Length: 396
Ligand code: NIG
Image (cartoon, rainbow, N blue to C red):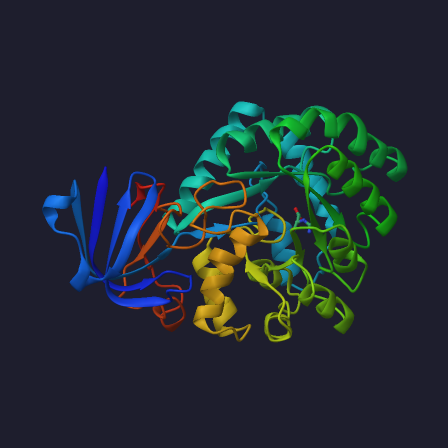
């Protein structure tokens, strides 16, 4: 099935081809076939279907590389107290743990399905999600199964918090032993919340090493609530990403700039926890790779709106529009190692995410605007017109 898109006012390829004004785009089933100036478009007779976008901007679908979608319940009261001056503490995770443990697999499945649909409605086409609200073998395995049915990438986060009443050392042994065994076939990644009040450096290293030995890639939650060992550990372990990075030293920045570890910014979380926004400009100016993600979860970021995150990154973190779009598309894809490693294919030979080049996934975000700058120029306005995943329209 060859579908030709016409009426594209601005095609942001997020590739060497940059932005093409007045463009055409041809997809062939689930992948991008070709693109270029409208003057070079194929004729109607050469394609199966023509979709006229009526002068709208097209960009790659957002790649949301950090979410915690498998949960039940909410923490609205905790949030309201925070807005009245309380500070964020990781202990709230235990509240969500209780709700998630008692939800049942069918309900979790339904909740995640709805959250993916909401993501699609906001232009997201690729989702990572984590376990981490089960915190025992049975519930972590359940969360991993649910995640694997819906998300593109699944991360095992048994090491999110030591559950109330458990001994930290014994819990780490559980995570690296029976829990890892129970989830590893459903996950591609292992993660740890390396932070004061969660897991220390030595415990975090043990968790990541066990995951690596089991064949999982490594990611780290680090430097969210204060300076600490998260970034250095992530770089040392060859992590694909270290996420949050609110409190980083010049040494951390230099380590990131000299590595393939992506610094993932979570602006909605920073606002919802009233932390200073992560130093996006400092990271980019130093040459570090960045991604922007939603961090959808009930504690620190109850939103899946990547549009909001990109808007915030431009308006409040001083990124240019190009930088913010790249971070939320190709940057997220790199953080998941689903980026274009050549010929539109990712390192595993699958159609790449987060870019519009021949061979890449036909994952598109059509804006109800002539130019993508409207994401920041008209903040908060409804801007997602259509969303396409692997050549199928999933929204609009
Ligand atoms: O990424 N920082 C750790 N984990 C989540 C928050 C989890 C929660 O409070 O429920 C985060 O912000």
